[in-house]
Structures are given as structure tokens and as C-alpha cells.
Amino acid sequence: MKSTDERTGSRPVDPGDLGRRVAHRRTELGLTREAVAERGGLDAGFVAYLETHPVPVGVTTLTRLADALDTTVTDLLGGGRDVPPGRAPANARVRTEELDPAACWARLGAGGVGRVLLTAPQGRLVALPVNYRVLDAAVLYRTVADGTLARADGGEVAFEVDRLDEVFATGWSVLVNGITSTVSDEEAVQRFERLADPLPWAGGERDTWMRIEPTGITGRIIRPDGPPVVGSEFE
Image (tube, rainbow, N blue to C red):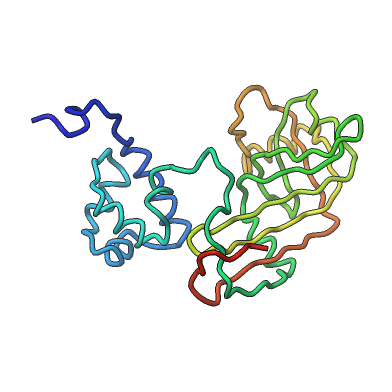
């Protein structure tokens, strides 16, 4: 018997992508598969199978998964990728806290995606996303040899990373100020490749290693004190 999608000709959601998003969100929350299953009223074996195999999932199960993972069905299905984050209603009952340097470095973790803010030619201010890694209290990334990021060698830059929780309308941000430099020492490059290679999502030949030596690091976090209130403004 053909599925509903086959009969109607509509394009089904890629369950492989769904499984990867479930696994990624579960890891973000620090939950085991058993914990997700318990929170969503699901079978732990099903959660494990979903994360590793293409599985068609119904609306009821999707809703349970989203609730168990403190997210939305839209996010699990990869929706909203063409719109900016932070469109959820604000939470009126929140508190803002400054992060100390240790907490800032903990938020940066081993690496991820951040933005390098610098002054480009003709005095233009630009913010360019990069895949980064943190090693020896410095930020590492790779770029093209003749690109804007490489030409910033020896200059002052800022590096910013943030994370938003669309469900609770909260988040955090960390800003690193520092001096960027090109890493040309072959021994150092080999060590970086072995311990902290930030593989660029953009692809292509990005073999110029850059390092930001921090001169300062600051951050803040917005924590929830209550449920979201519809119709308020996020400031």
C-alpha cells in the first residue's frame, strides 16, 4: 500500500534529517535517550532507532519529541532556516546576568560557529561567520589566503558567539576582543590540525590559519524567571 505522501505526490520530510536534529538537541540538553523517551512518553528503543535510521514519524510523535526536547516541531523539521532567530514572543519575567571570564570560555566550549567583526578596506565594518576552535585560550579559524579575514592579520578584531532558546525566549552572548595573526609555523599548524581543526562549512581551499589572541572577554546571559508572555517586546 502506498503512503499518503506517495498518493498525494507531496514531498515527505527527510527522516534522516529529523534523526540528526533529535540527536543534536538531545546532546545540547545533556539528556540520554532514555530520559527523552520518559519525558515524551515514548519507547527508548524507538528514540535510538530514530536517531540512527530514516523513520517516518507522525504528528503526535513529533509533538511528544518536541515537548521532551524543549523545542518546537518546526525546529525539529528544520523550519525557519530562512528567517532570523529571535522571532518568538518575549518572556517578560527574565533576569540578565553578566558572565565572568571563566563562564564565557565555558560557553565558547571547544568550538562551533561564531562571527569575526573587523574593519574591512574602505573602512567598512563587517561581521563574517567562521567555524572556530578554542585551543590554548585562543580562537582559531581557517580562511582563504587572499580574503578579508586574512588581510586582517595583525589588526584588532572582535569575535562574537551567541545562542538563543526560541522556546523560552532567552539566550546568551560572548564577545572576545583581541589581535588576529596568521599562523605560519608549520609545527603549530600540524598541532592545530591534530588537536583542533575547525573544518569550514563553506568548503573550498581554506588553508590559511588565523589565531585571535584575546585582550578581553565579556558576556551576558538572559535567564527565564517565568513562562513566556505573548505580545511583549524583547530588548
